[in-house]
Image 1 (tube, rainbow, N blue to C red):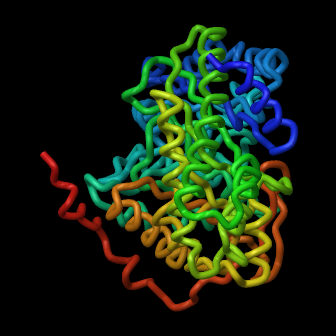
Image 2: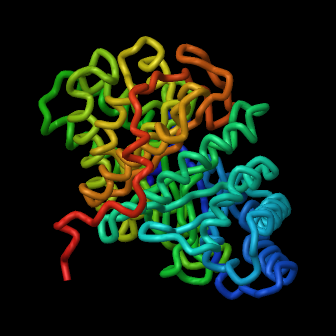
Image 3: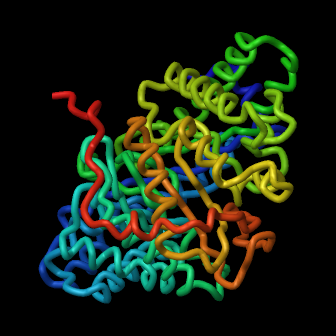
Length: 454
């Protein structure tokens, strides 16, 4: 239980330091919805989601009101659609019908986003999985709340370069399909290596096949809380710095644990994990970049940035695992450019480059996140960037991901505005030397030698 002193501290963090529960995400298995008839399948999907999640939003609102803890999003993740729709879907257009069903279900229960329009193709693609992938541009263009993800690699299997090549094309097509909305579809599309089954954060959430029929996962965020704590120990040694981050992460995770348990009880759905990720927002004072600068950098992107981020990520995880027995998902620090005012500021003045961000992804929770690139960037160049990011995840046995937004009609120095939590982003330069011959090779990159652990 949280004692009275912790309650006082929590109120202070909420009122003055931007602490919030970023999301309550209900994972729902759709494995029992499978059917060879597309109309029956869609009916099963709609019925299962609306029955399981009918009270999700109201329960979240009740917890907010009773405990005074802001819960920014209520979301749903479902079984990767490619696993349940192969018998019913013969064309990409068939999959789009499922995406529209998912969107209607999300609208009906009132959630912010629904994730799981996904394919797991780390080692190879079935025709059904390829059809789903090829449907993504249209599916994201004609829906509002659906998020898509494609897992193209893992440490155990290597990297499916055929899928990487295809995803470069798909990302460009998605940008073109949603060019009238600042290429917003690409903000709802993630490419993964080593994706976790219990991630509550969008756009990459899906309900893994090892999970229960339904589960509650909670994501907590507190960059402002960590920065405020570090201001009190400015100039102290590394031991004090680490202890401060660790203790703060413990307190933040306790809030997530409380909300997760309460949501689980009210919805009569098992508690899964708390994901403690320092996920920033466009709000001033809620920035991971500001934390890194408080640690001692003139600007994020300066020499020392990767080391500072590694320290931050590690201490956040150490503090979180002491606060809950079920810390999971992607716990650590996110570095999405468009969603972090400090990152945007550094990118605009040239202190933060795509190459530096790639280096930072070696030690953070995810990867190249919400990065706007010139609209004329070729599909093969996008695939090359994806391949680099997937290789970092594969070799380092960690989750990496990429959310790239080719800003159609925009060039370096221009600006794209997504709105809300997705924020805005400066268009960043991309290395223009070609990788066509590399990307055009067929097959997969083998798993690294340290993957053989049996």
